Length: 529
Image 1 (cartoon, helix red, strand yellow):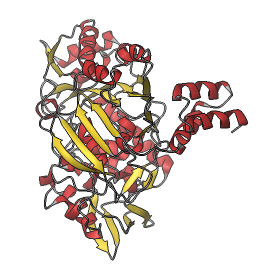
Image 2 (cartoon, rainbow, N blue to C red; image 1 turned 60 degrees about the vertical axis):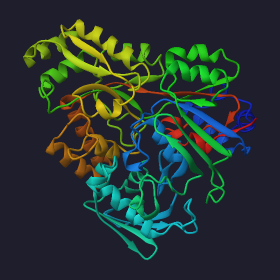
Image 3 (cartoon, rainbow, N blue to C red; image 1 turned 180 degrees about the horizontal axis):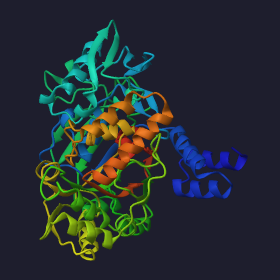
Image 4 (tube, rainbow, N blue to C red; image 1 turned 120 degrees about the vertical axis):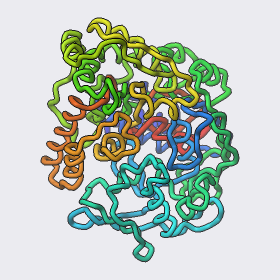
């Protein structure tokens, strides 16, 4: 790093240089994009935090049906709420995605990676004053392996054969070796609770930087700082208020007027307008998130692969990225992995918009009549517009799409994972294995395309225990091809996470793991006034 770059980094640390300004100047000075992004994030994290104040977040993605049980977290709001009061055993590095110690301070695998021993951190207290023990950890993980818990992490946890304590250590014995095991424990449902949450899964008692004060599902949640937090590098404000704001216009108005400090899911179409506001910063982060159109492979007419292929070829991906994302993203290829993942399968031909091929497969499918697509504003920013745009591109292939706009409240319980064709989103996962295990493994509760293939499951399990990276990469390539050509997901675009804050918000960390600084926004930022 040359002297000029050091100067720029110092400006970031002092809070006087935005990400956009830093990236532009650093790259002009000959710094690569990857290095510039790394330097900016490290410099922002190195800034001297200011403690105190009341942080208000206006977030889309909450509903009256939201549950405080971490096992049942579904939406963006609950994702962020869970990060406020709870901790996992392992976290992921915001820049590299590598496993980082949290409540587990270290770990050691067996030679075949089928047995993992985790050393649990001592001296950590729950919000109720009880000290964290190995029994709490064991009970938590066991609860998430029980199908009765309806845990979103169940697909991941099914690979664990035995969970037990060995003194103060946690020992996990897997059904087969898995080199990614620590990263699987970063799943945001796996919040460690007293006695695993078995006594009261809704208590919201954890070891996180904030204690929950109140919760009104679909309305708001409030928190106060945990004065006994075991970490000193987070929880800088005195209190946090998370307000559900599912209306995009209301969120922008609230931010522009200073009613809230931060909003998520900024529609790219409004970015230029927001940039004109002298009090607002745009926070755009590239990562693993993707917007999808999901078909249930086990329900007519989507149980016909020719129809699924027709609908995939009828998707104009380039136009989607341009008009829906405003350029804040990249074209997808109908499988849920992009080049931010380790062992990304290279050389797979990009599927392009082809009305002729779509018409060919549509005719071959034998289907006639309209195809019903359900959507809502809460599915992803611009989802309704995306559905209409898709409707138009399908017309050129002779496919009639009927778009039904559903209410935002209840969409994640009444439409997603229930209705056979709908719009949705995924925030990505730390590893390819976890992404596939959560959404494509036959037995996964969140298999929202009903893609149930024993041959795919076999490849997934084989890749999980394969320690030769070259062989593992080939297995992941075969899995990607299977999902792309035979699965029920239409994945037109990987989205940048576009959020915004007032200039009073400092220390924001651009995290490739997921949206809203991987859900940690309230725990990482501070206020300068």
